[in-house]
Amino acid sequence: MKRNTPLITLLTGAALGVILLIASMLATPSKAPTSYSAPATPAPPSTAVAQLSPESPTPTATSPASAVVTAPARADYAGEVQGGGASVAISIHDGQAIAYVCNGSVIEAWYKGTAVGGVLIMTGKNHAHLSAIYDFSKATGDILAHGTDYRFSVSVVHKPSGLYQAIAVVRGATIKAGWIVLADGTQVGSLEADADAAAPSATRAPALDVAAGTAREGSTVLVAKPVSGVTGSGF
Amino acid sequence: MTVQPGTSAPLPQDRAASGAAKLVVPSLIGALVALTLGIYGRLHNPTGIAINIAGFSSPGSVKSWLATGATVFAIVQVGSALVLYGKVPRVAAPSWIGGLHRWSGRIAFLLAVPVAIHCLYALGFQDYSTRVLAHSLLGCAFFGAFTVKMLILPKRGLPNWLLPVLGAVVFIVLTAVWFTSAYWFFSTFGIKR
Image (cartoon, rainbow over all chains, first blue to last red):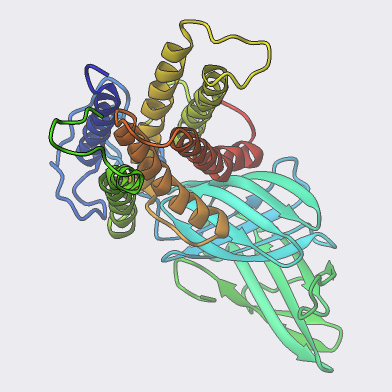
């Protein structure tokens, strides 16, 4: 080769990388958790530098290029899945996440996972999994429970809406119940009669008295605890 | 190699040794590239933000489409390499096949760069699931392997099998990177813009 064209290719790619890296750093507002200091007023480039979250805590009127924010570190989401066949609740607390899906009878699953950089990856028993992207207003993704696939886009919720969990040991078996209280106050809940099983089966949970935090299953009183990323309860 | 008057021709083992020596520096540079990307991804706090391109539904989809484009060009790479080496029966290598191979490679690489920068900057080197760990490791390995391939291409006196093997490694690693990311994205969120 007369000119070392492979080297030119390599250096072109490296230069492109450096340019994009600097553009990314310039687009990061200074209060974002980055170890590099960025200028406080990023200039809007011609390709719209956009954010994962369409709304930010300090909305600027029309500029789409500024007010780029990260996903929240602590948040609770709840809502119905697309099609309305079930409800899902997700709680995020400093990188950890707990979620629950349930249709008020047999389809339900608990998930644990991590929430990093706006991306949520969670797994549960019996091949259950949840993948989503989340921001300051909603969480959007895909959930698999009991062989059933749902897509969802659910909004942030605040107390007393959200996820509740009760665990009790009755006659040697661990009972685990979960309730999702939606933003409009309606609740849906399921109960695993043998939560330690590899693939626990579930039935409808008794109604949860949200104010008292209790539910009655036969002669057993279940004491429900909120699972909330915002308060850290349940983590 | 031309033999200077007064010296004797290099012995076969000297030739093999000097052949291997030519690989040391490129391999070290490739390893350094891979390590640098991984260490940067690990130490840098992921910001979660994206550079979005108008017309796509999300940063994840931009990256998935760009990555898929890079992988398609990588497949063209493999095909053109096979024709170049005369491995495809009844297909003679046309004069433009070398150009196709080089340019498809350049396009694949340049499509991969913005995806990698975004990934490292917004998401970082992660290990919270097997898929994500494999993606992080393979992503760094791809750029290291590609660097080695570019650095050894102009060198003479290397065994004939080296370049095809290195090309195959680059291709396999890129495909695995695509599989642990864009494929997952499209199968989770649907194939959409």
